[in-house]
Length: 260
Ligand code: COA
Image (cartoon, rainbow, N blue to C red):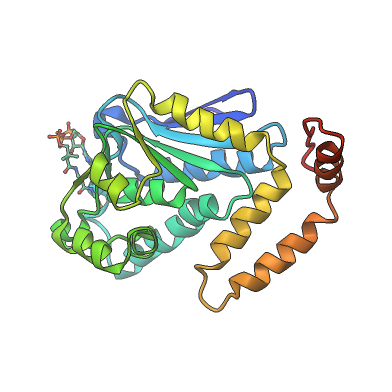
């Protein structure tokens, strides 16, 4: 399918999604969110895709936020709908996906851009990256899960500081606060994301899905994460991949996982 606001390219088992609105610093308008929903849903359903790397077009920005020009016309009901549908169709979709998704954060990751990066399972940042949740400068708060995901990643005190001051932090600070997994040079950004994803793609795909589900369960209110872990652990024993992994280990050879 042809997209207007994103680029998609599959190389091997990796699907690269690039937010492609460089003149607007890749700001997420409604059309871009819709295309992300379509591309990510298709990738999760496509057996030849093992994982996704998301980045922003150009050197300046990953994503500089939700598209502010679309906010002027909203009322309470439309604002609520925007956040609710955005969370479900893109941000929760990524976080709860059964395949690893890595954000390669090049430049500004602000507002909805940082929320997009935080919905991904892993974040790699280039050393010029700048991150923040500046919504209160607009009279808003984060609406795509930022208040929850930032708090889980960096703790309540630092999250409230970042949200209420609206200050941007550097890549080095983001690493120090555990907001990103790695900081590398701009040239090393995609290679580092690829190195991580390629390693995951050597592992048993259904076990990766179970790991994502079990880790996510701990952050869901009313869900017993330990119980989910037990159920997911048990489910692994129904997979051909577990038989393959165990026999490969015992035979001292590399496993050949099929995701079955
Ligand atoms: N929504 C809509 N348009 C945006 C945008 C956003 N979140 N962020 C940047 N843009 C647009 C600018 O309006 C400008 O468009 P124009 O050339 O048609 O005027 C273009 O992208 C380039 O941005 P500009 O502000 O000129 O770049 P800069 O280098 O001076 O500043 C930022 C970069 C990121 C500091 C600045 O663009 C900014 O503060 N953006 C908004 C960040 C934000 O509040 N995000 C949270 C939204 S909830």
